[in-house]
Amino acid sequence: MITSITRLMLFFFPMLLLNNPTSGQTDWYDPLRVDFPVIEGRFMDKNDYFRLPSELQLVVRKEVWELSKNSAGLSLGFLTDATEIQVKYTVKGNHQMPHMPATGVSGVDLFFRKSEEEWNWSRGVYNFGDTIQYIFKIDPNPNFEKEFKLYLPLYNEVEHLSIGVRKGHTFEFIEKNSEAPIVVYGTSIAQGACASRPAMAWTTIFQQALGMPLVNLGFSGNGLLEKELIDWISKKESSLIILDCLPNFVPGKGISDDEIRARIQYAARKLRADNPEVPVLFTAHAGYSDQYVDHSRRDLVTKLNTILLEELDKLWEQGVHGIHHLSSQAIGLDQFDFVDGTHPTDGGMLKYAKAYQNKILEINQEERK
Image 1 (cartoon, rainbow, N blue to C red):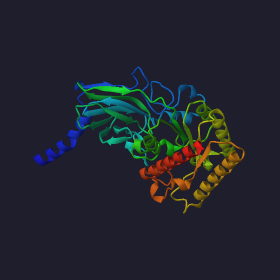
Image 2: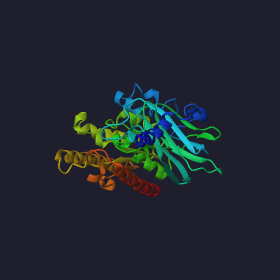
Image 3: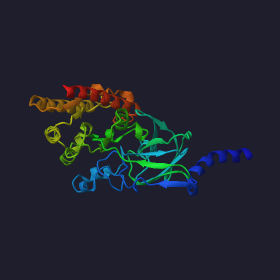
């Protein structure tokens, strides 16, 4: 009997700590209630965790607007000398999906800066209830504050979020980076499916490696090179524009091959005309893990990648400069890099990020010529 009680205590005690944090001994900080912009990964500053501004609500399709409420790619920085950091927040949607865990759909990731170019991941103890809670234990160092970055959920809408530290410890939010960001407009893969954690999305791996701000405009099932979004992106200051939309041009969307060609042409010409110094990178369809046994899937990938290259060839022949191409071979996914045949695992995300890093080096060399 005593053994059974002991086991129950060992099981429930950590959960009690999560569900009953010592709020009376904790100071809580809301990143939306600061006198300066804190949220990284979007162009506008507003009192929510959306990725698109309110003026686009009646411009883009409803599906795109609803997906823009997912906080994919958003992050925030802060300084603290605390040895324990609590994060509590509420989300609007389901915590998980059949092919993607709660830690990826609705979880957060915390990193602390080890050096100017290196961030280290901090493991959190979490509880997914009506309010999601994470507790991070940090080694004490009385000599200086540590710089942290918190990455928000990939596939859920954050309604309210607070960060707590024990009373007596310092805490200060960091103003968002004002550098021109890399912009990624794409599909569910760009949004982060099916990473196990927010920081395992290729966009975040890529952003951390470069040390530059990045705006994630991945819209699950709805990355379709639409004029409304291309026009909006063209008005924003950016350092690189990545268009990774081919995987969403599936037959069920009802978009003809001629229309796909027209959208590629419009995107390239519009973005280069409005931003002649900003490179535009079109990404090939990286393929499916089952395309060698399902020939209809293989044929779709081949067709889309052929269309893209044919349209880019036309642009290059007509003297449109600053247009680049990332091939599926450069990404190099194989059958072990997918969760469900379509969306990459963490390993697949790493391959995506590495391919983009290599391509950026190549683009920089070309742009210097």
